[in-house]
View: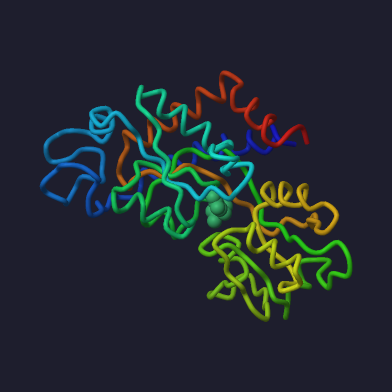
Length: 285
Ligand code: ARG
């Protein structure tokens, strides 16, 4: 199951590369350091000819943006950042021989970290979407996910996706779960009564358990982790609401950074490290 999921992701990745190559690069404001002209530094080559990778090496650190309340992909354990994305990001830093700096921000600000040059890439269990592709490029996919529904074990009025209609549903702001229930274009037509938005899915789940929500919509693996921790109270429905692919976001047009991330992902696949990581954090399915 797990393997099949990721194999499909790899095959799709080839297609993605083609479609990404078709996007022209729009350069954003600027990156964090010294270039005096601000027009092109978010893309790979600055006007001085110095690439983003050169700048990272010179700085001795690479900055990753994330939102670390998304176990098993990123979370805080005591004083440490842990999770699949954290370990992949460490590999990216190791590949360049620099330190990894983690910017833990609200999920809705993760993309802006890149477009304003505060971070070099973002790893946040982030699904590839058309909307996000307007502002950033993505690496190859490394994980397949779906949105799922979390409800109270006892007495829930939501037992299937259609039951979300007229209910109060919690999501994390700016996520694909948010888009799924909100859907201004009417495509999903969920028809919920009210969407409550939270800074994290953990906060949403807490409100579910205190009776302020009828359901939470969120990514399947983080949902499984949350349910494991509160197994006496909440459960996850089996329905898969969407098909999504996680990838690492890089500055728009920064081919060098994209290639670097893709190389690290491919190396990890090949060496079996990616499988080990998934088993470590998710276990056998
Ligand atoms: N996969 C979903 C999305 O892309 C949720 C990601 C939330 N990630 C996080 N680190 N909180 O919108």
